[in-house]
Image (cartoon, rainbow, N blue to C red; front, side):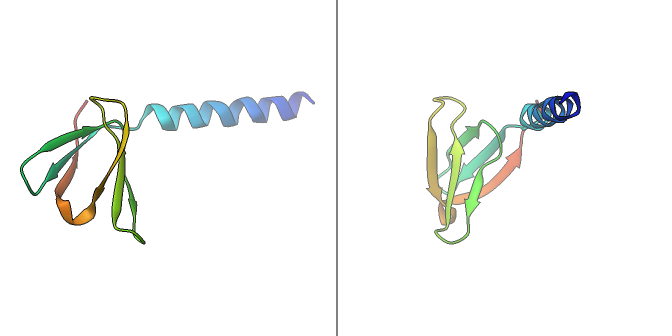
Length: 76
C-alpha cells in the first residue's frame, strides 16, 4: 500500500513540475498583432488551427495557421 501511494505522489509531483515549466510564447500575426500566450500553443494539423490561452484575457482562443507569421518562446 505504501509503495502505491509513493508512486502516486511521485507521478503528481512530476506532472506539476512539467506544468510549472511551461513558458509563454509570442505569436506574431500577418497583420502585425502580437499575442502573448500562457504556455505553448497547440497546433491541430487536421484543421490548421492553433489553440492557445491568451495571457492577457485568460481565455482559450484559436487562429488559423495561415494568419500566423511566427511564434517565439519568451524569456521569463
